[in-house]
Each structure stands twice: as C-alpha cells, then as structure tokens.
Amino acid sequence: MMDWVPAVFIVFKVLVLGTGMFFAIKWHYDQGRKENGKEKLSALLREGGKVALVFTLLLVTLLFLTFALGRKLGLDLTFP
Image (cartoon, rainbow, N blue to C red; front, side):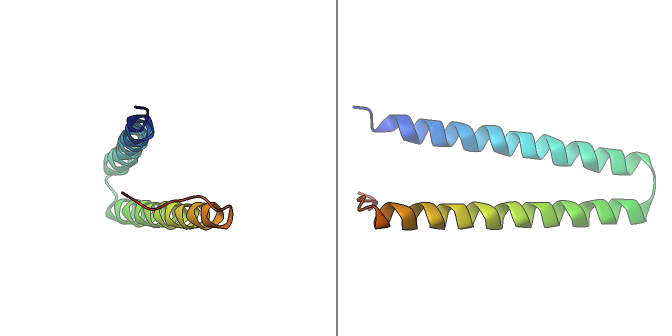
C-alpha cells in the first residue's frame, strides 16, 4: 500500500531540484547576456557546465555509496 510513497517523493524531489537548477542557470545566462561580452558569456557557460558535471558526479557517487552501504547492512535492494 505504501510502496508508491518513496517513488512520489523521489519524483517530486527531482522535479523541484531540476526546476531550481534550470532557473538558476537561466538567470546566470541572462545576466551574462546583459553585459554584452562574448568572453563573459562563454566563461559563464563553461562554468555552468563544470558545475553541472561536478553535481552529476557527486550524485552518482552518493548513489553508489548508498547502495554499497545498503548491501553491507544486508538490505535487499533488487528491483522487482
């Protein structure tokens, strides 16, 4: 009965964080366009890409460590 709760919370969390990241990147992109500097815009896009890459790597690492800890504790983490 309660199996859907974690799925709904995870989807909600992904949507909220994804929306927040989209608007943060959009705001910084728009700020870069206001200054009319192509160097600043390319630097801004490059830094945004680095931040997105670091965030993705940290997320994958956290996911891996969570599953490793779960297996070590003897939890059944297989998908149905």
